[in-house]
Length: 255
Image (spheres, rainbow, N blue to C red):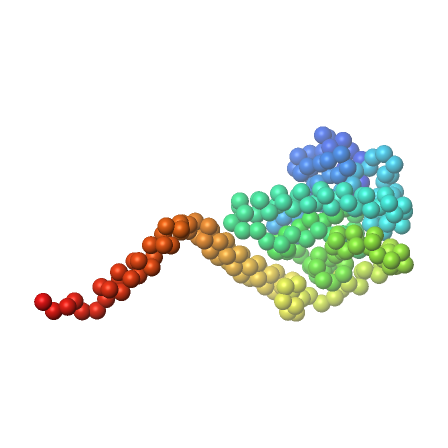
């Protein structure tokens, strides 16, 4: 099984025969697998299963799917989005359980994927994995560069003018390649970085700062929730208490 076609193999395989180290979960229409080379703390792939009238050729990549029957394409993308939404909830629960807070999660496709068979990336926005080794890796997931196409954007194409939909579909895969050679810059603050080690150190600092902020916000929210409620009787008693306190203020009268 080659790395190039491994996703296609999974998509045509009975989920019961896929190793637990690979398969996270599945539905009748989709598979969720762990990314073999995760670029973030959490990184999964959501694949459409090859079944019924959906062939391996039709599902080879996003562009091929969208160039086919538009209704079928919309349904496939919707199924992927549904599975990804469920996965996102599970990831957020795991974030809170293991890290004490939750942070951003991105859902999107690569404009020029390196592996055969359509797959949706679902990954946390820290991008601090040891597998993030070079500029190509980072720029392929930069959320504003254009190589990473958010699923919400793809879904919006179906409701756009037909000419716009066609223009998005007709984009050649090779037009995305120059984006991978763009300079390195932090996706959060836009600061330019001279190399990957410097960028990753900066990203970790940014992530740690975000973690601290979110944890503090969560602590304050919890404290407010645990504050005892003031009953109406207590409210009515407050003016009397203040009045009594005011009467006792100052020096006591001389005998």
